[in-house]
Length: 158
Image 1 (tube, rainbow, N blue to C red):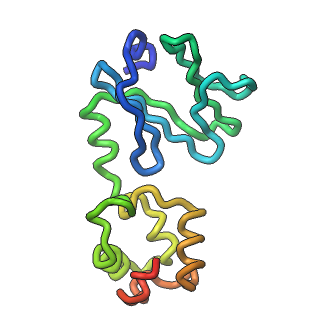
Image 2 (cartoon, rainbow, N blue to C red):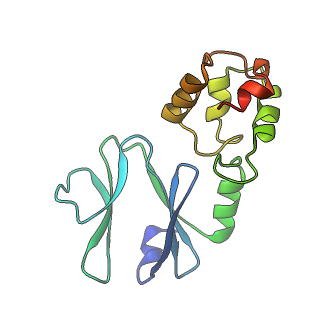
């Protein structure tokens, strides 16, 4: 599947899943952007440097993906491919299924450092370095502490 296949389609919805920007297209496919560190989706940027892909919109504006370090990705996915791709991701912290009990169970199964567990996208989707550091700082937990050593009461503070 090629980005050119998106020509003539309409963006139906823009949303996020984990660390991804997802654009649902009228064709049923999804444009999936993983911006990583320096990537950004912008409309009519004045600075065109580092633009890696541009989409001309019906109203004459331009939607671009700009990535200074070129670490991010842009992919056009069928619904089946998107489900397989995101199916490997864990529950998001803002999802109703993400409860203190759920977090405590995840932590209790791992000997790894708690920060590494929090950032494992297969377990918890969407937590990166900054969010993990901030949560651990606020809870007073050493990031290198073994995850399974964190009690349920302490896990509730995260």
